[in-house]
Image (tube, rainbow, N blue to C red):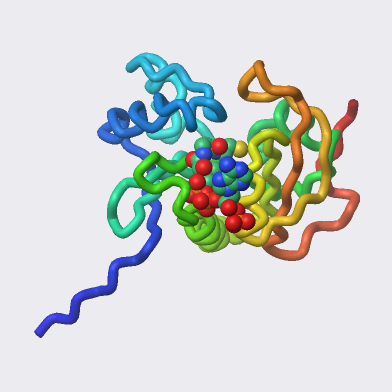
Length: 197
Ligand SMILES: CC(C)(COP(=O)(O)OP(=O)(O)OC[C@H]1O[C@@H](n2cnc3c(N)ncnc32)[C@H](O)[C@@H]1OP(=O)(O)O)[C@@H](O)C(=O)NCCC(=O)NCCS
């Protein structure tokens, strides 16, 4: 008899246009909209997520599945692929050239149950697997998003800096806490990205 494979707790796959209805529902949820500021019209979703789906953006949008059920979104990108953002962040914390960042949301059905930490830890393992050249993950979080920075701490990240960055939500003050997880030994100090400001 064929043995059944155990279901993996968390898996990820690239976002697809067929996920847009689910994505719209998550982004319209006030708890998510508070921190992920997106236009959820058809045109808005196409503008923000379409180029990534078509491989025209360096950043990756992943659907996170919990036991095969869509549960949320993980975005990841190499910071150097977004020079303006990397330069602003480097004013707060010098970055390795192969520094990556990650962002995440969970839909209401999966949120607030302690599941976020497992999702994030698995997302880190996936990044290590898919992009072994990544040396560190650096995540700036608005100081007011305590659930998010607690989640990072529970997934093994360390707060290494704090400073002002443009908030996604203009209603927020600029103060961000910056968290880091080393993935592999960094490069020589001479090759780090530093702000020229
Ligand atoms: C951030 C998010 C993915 C966390 O997932 P989650 O499943 O809700 O998180 P958890 O239940 O694992 O809780 C994470 C931590 O926050 C703590 N926490 C939960 N509610 C809290 C609250 N209201 N205030 C402070 N801490 C809180 C938990 O105790 C846990 O900390 P611990 O591990 O030290 O006990 C989810 O809340 C979310 O999608 N939020 C909206 C989008 C967002 O903010 N994204 C991040 C942008 S920077």
